[in-house]
Image (tube, rainbow, N blue to C red; front, side, top):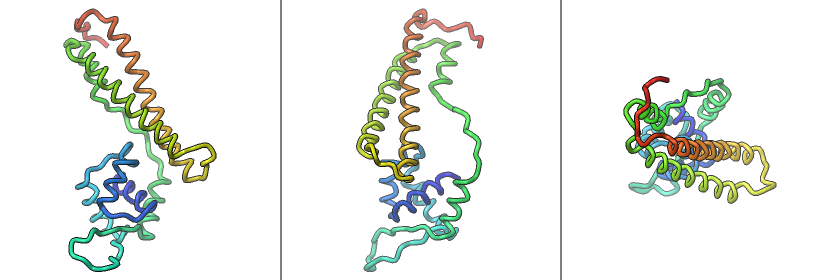
Length: 187
């Protein structure tokens, strides 16, 4: 149920068309809650049907003109209700960790190269987040909205830092393993 709430959040920040939402997801919300163009459009239709958003009236009627949406009071109330509700953390599900566990019993073929690839991907993402932090959150930008948005970005920075350090550690451990031998299967 979180995608509709992500869309409501984005629309409360700024009324937008579906295309604009897709672009904004790619540049912000999509870092921690991804959605395809089709998913966003499908949810816009549902949110409009539920009375949470409405299509803004066009300034000049034109065939094929993109629709822009804004949040209605019912949508704001739904987002406030959802935001205030308690939720348990989700368990970690990571394919790389499962593959390492499998490698313990079937051998490590291809794992080291993928660990290096993942490390590079996490380092790149970390660099991107740090660039966003420097650009969007200079010292002194400490209004409530800015601080909460920065807190979300800090979660991304901290997670990417964790993964980069963990992968560096994993590669060190991997280098000490006997060449590609499978483990004993216990653990």
